Image 1 (cartoon, rainbow, N blue to C red):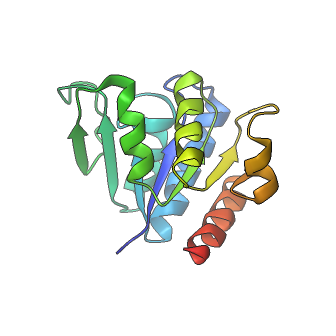
Image 2: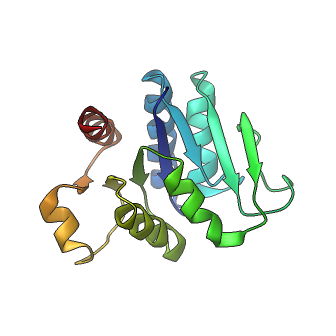
Length: 161
């Protein structure tokens, strides 16, 4: 089975974050992995989906809505949940590894769910401050500086499965 890599981040993002999200999407597709995100047509979700789609990758969106009206057009599969932010647990449980990018409370909730549910987290452009010290010490949460470093960290986590 192909690994599913969750890319989580804000619906509103600056251009530098969007470019890095696109690059993460491109790199995930080049690895032959499946990209999963929140599926919306904005921010890190749309940018990472666009990057993966441009490389012919498979993109799954777990939408909080009951319709696909706000879905990014770069999804191959849109899963409508009607669950609002409760869908964050589905995002995490459906992913082998989470790449967390700049975002807000929703992104931080996905990081917390991932760690609680035993999923490793790669943090790129997201300041978590002093949160999750035990997970950092155990290596289940790692901070990286570039999309390439994020992919290297994902490789390491997948090798541990």
